[in-house]
Image 1 (tube, helix red, strand yellow):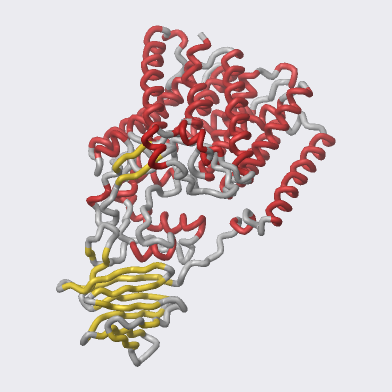
Image 2: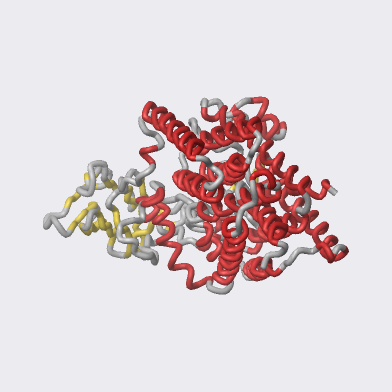
Length: 574
């Protein structure tokens, strides 16, 4: 019954292309760290989550019937036990969530609700159970080639600077008539320019998805014996690599190297020295072309390969009843009002700087630093941001985006010894996330609640590392840390156990056993290996990216396909 593969094909081909404008309230207006206006627009996640929910529910029903009525066909489910326990703790985290509504429905640029998280596991088990014959693997392979071809077209337009989503006819497709009248020409295109983000919102997400597709295509290329098909697969490999390059994602580039190495290790005995030399030369030539193009663009990509510490040396900022206390370049400064004047004192200067009301005071921290007060309000320009403080009876209070007045306090952080700027300030986010983990050893804060668990009141830290004190940190930019916070430490251990079992079984099945000859290679073995390497790529990039609706569904489907291939090839998973 090939139609049982339709849910998998929908995940591979249709879901990544689902783009539709939705207007929703994130519900954060009650927090001091968010604006009073919490109405947001979303193109890439809101409706995609509901589509995934529908697919997940239908797939779950079919899977339940299959496991009940065709027990003789049921494959060993013991490897799925850790995933079942993960779902239990995800459910418990939802029940005790700090925002149950967000955990049930999804929220804020993510929409990974508890239903979505369970759907991921259902899709994995479904693919594992439903994949049986060679024809099934052929259909999946066609689906992978199809979505890759569509991505080539979309990515090609984006590389040339002509994003399809910028065209009026396309915007009419992704908006209602009323929305088009109001939002025409304003689709959320945060990553404009020639960055490739496809229909996946973020170039990093596009890079993760493209790496998984490349892993499958690359494996099929190495294992293909027919010259015409091999030429087609080589073409697809080169085009995929091109799109990956133009995502400007460093994690994806490292994942590509991992994929190339693992693929060659598996098929090294079949590759002649001549073909190996030609292949390596072609790869070097391709990257040389990319580098030359990058040089013509003022090294847009290579300049991102090494994180330069360009942050302001602002290491602390707090306020209390005595004033505003700033630590800048290891010098402590105090800013306060006295006798209708604004004063700035420091450790290094004995004489304070003084300015009258309405007069600008140049501060010694940096060239652009300045302050001015008017009617008990202090306007502080520092680190390219304007901060407003108000003197009240209880002290000097920071005016938040919601208009509330709160004391600016320091938050608990893990000391990374000045490396917080690494990974486009991922180090900063990790340094503030690590202290949270003790609170969520058993039960997490709830799916899609990371933004509410994170210390958003760290205005000074966000000023330095995010260039915006009002930035909302909605993810840890590390899937494992995000899972720990949202669904608990036990749930993360369950995922790790599953990953370890998956990696060990795949390595024993595809690498330690004597490979079959090229003439006897089956589609099940070839595609299964490609899906296995794709999953390794995803697990690696998860160190620097989060689980998202743009990447995770494909990963879990490929994971199930790889497990099915291992089961068939190994006559079980033992």
